[in-house]
Length: 197
Ligand SMILES: [Ca+2]
Ligand SMILES: [Ca+2]
Image (cartoon, rainbow, N blue to C red):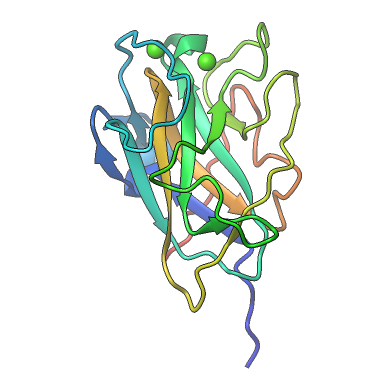
């Protein structure tokens, strides 16, 4: 028997469990024509992740403990406005290369993902982003492992950092998108097939 590693995980946000103000939004340009959205209410940007957030959504996945994954998220900002475009991302079961828990659900540690790549970079429609910030084309080197063995479920929790943000896809890749984004940072039209679990 050959065990094929799970190298590519594609999650559609429409599969998530929602809490607080997060809601589905019909969008013909979104994966499955549904985006998740926290409508803009002009709340101030959250300075730090919350251990016990009110506004979040959670996605299940079955990661491969032998793999090192790179995270990508496709976001859109209400009104293409920079104060409507960021989230904090936490994980259930993620560890660093040394096996220490990182960015755990229930802590104040998270990856910050902001659609606009830098001040003045601008944003338009959907864009693929990671936790890097500050320059056009910038890519983060953060890689994630998951300690869950034997096909145990893990989770990704995404909480609001700036309201008005929309998300339709989350990707973990240990091969195809390990160093390059699945699509463009602006005006993106890439919809990947969902990985069934
Ligand atoms: Ca922002
Ligand atoms: Ca906002």
